[in-house]
Image (cartoon, rainbow, N blue to C red; front, side):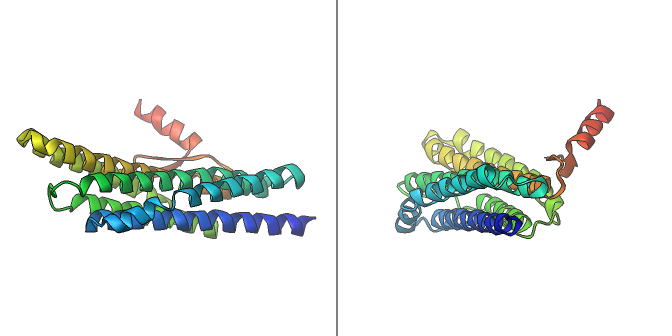
Length: 234
């Protein structure tokens, strides 16, 4: 019975990673469409809308079957529950990528407001975070978790930089407002994708150790150590 459980858990992990690869692909394609202002490739991204939903449903169904028929314990149980949760994060990343594609279609109908510099750089960091969090889950290894937490703060800094840049344009001329707001929404979607990558790292850390983790101020903390940190600062 134990080998059957192990085989099913490995299959579940592969399903989650396949969903992760699709989420990464959609994000990358959406970013390239934005940089190239390419309507055709943007519509290709939007045409893949149902793929991620189907994968998510299959993963959740597989996890529920394992839980209800094989009674996993300890780390096996955490992998099954964690896979269920991480699948939802990948689905959210895909939805945010689709939002970027939708906003890109709106944006390319208008003249380019400004050369894109900060947003692509921000997106590059978010993509690195996503890949590192996927590697953590694939290898079941916490190496790199601290890097993901550090990059999460950098993403927040990028978002503030984008917001400040775009505010200048909106204050300069009202005709720039629509395009500036679309770009800000795209940047916010990228920031939310980075947040999901952080949550994948946190959940994977829980799977490995059995302890709850949170990224806070560039560092990865257990809940206990985070509470102690807050007490020291109060």
